[in-house]
Amino acid sequence: YPGSIGLAPQYKTGGCNQACTEALSSCLMAHINTTGVHIPLWMTSPLTAIGWGQSPWYKTREGTFFGQIMLTNAQNNLDGYYCNGPGADKNVVPGRLGSTQGATPYQNAFPASDGLCDTNHSTGTCGLQANGDGNTSCTLNGKTWSSPITVWRGQTFQAESAQKFGSAGTNDCQPASNCGGGKRVSWIRAGVDGITLSGVNVAAAGTNNIVVYYTNGDSTGSADRQLAVSVNGGARQVRNFPPTGSNWDTVASITMTLSGFRTGSNNTVDMRSANDNVHQAPDLDWFEVINTTTASAAAVVASETSCSAGHTVSFKSYANGEYASARTNQDVNAQSSGVGTYEQFDIIDAGGGFVAFKSHTNNLYLAADMGVSSSAPPIRARSSSIGDWEKFTLEVQTDGKFGIKANANGKYVAAVGGGANANLQAVSSTVAQTSTSWEKFTCQ
Image 1 (cartoon, rainbow, N blue to C red):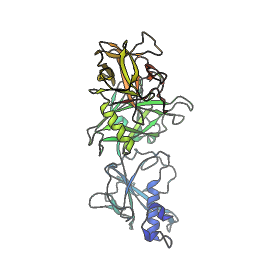
Image 2: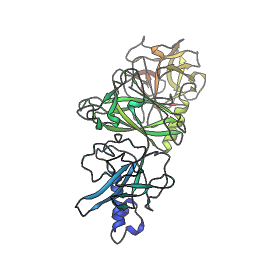
Image 3: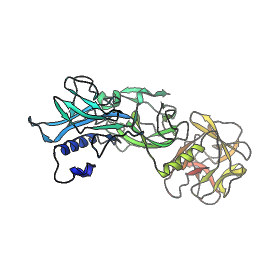
């Protein structure tokens, strides 16, 4: 049993002595989260099997856990404790430090003062490892615990501290302890409201995760709300956010894998509603940045890097493997096996998070031609200027392919029928996640 959490070999046989049970206690306490919200963690400890060394992906020292919850003390109580790290906000993490946790086997070791591990208190303190990796031991009321575990989390942001635009505004949570900082951001609607996170710091360029803590008080069974997220002005990625409870103060989380990050802290993340006049966004509480490294992530990064304003691209239909071509009476069809002038388009920044596509065939902009059909307008290279019909958003999918949404009617562009010479029309309400999806394109 102790070996299942990676303790040193001497603890794996012959029972579990005092040092073993103390180490096991610290590890169990460090993992406790009473809300069920998934929170990725990095741990350091003087325990040999855990050891020292920080991860560039987990920059916030949440706190340290120590004590003995496997045996009761002389007063028939459990000695389970935590203290706060210097980067921890007491109200940030639902179900963890300083939040409304319900019944837990641990308590704040130093509640009378600031609660920080590294500060001397009248009842004790925790010694800090020389390079700041974590606490070496903790003393409380004359007893020293030698196997503490220090927990680190990713970079965190409070939604109410972000730059807000449109009608987005701050709202109080009831009770305040339900939300990070006691507040959330509400009224994110119509694609023009939202927030921007600045100074997002990642250790490596490419794809990273952002854990979005949100509330959605819509009744159970209601349509999910949606959030469209763009990194450094790149394509938007849209995710659904289902109801979280019977009110707007119950927090849940969803992890979004986003591409387009640059190494360092010069990253911005734009969050707004999906701009389809149907789905409003959830209320936003706080965010945590977490690393991810996968082979598919590299493909997403490469794809999104080139599929943004300022680049010349070709669109290849996932349904039939053919390139979108503007060669027949201005209509755009997925019909070419290779790339030439007909298949090349300049991506132009159209403002407000939209882009436009200028065809190399005739130097005209692609439009969802609502004059032909409002429910299934064909995509045509027909316009000399950018208006509502000529605006689109690019939305990266989890597999690195793209959905193209027309501003004209809020529908996704589809290679209708999926066969040879498939006509591109803004006709679909969603991007099908199938192996023959009409709505998916690669951007090359």
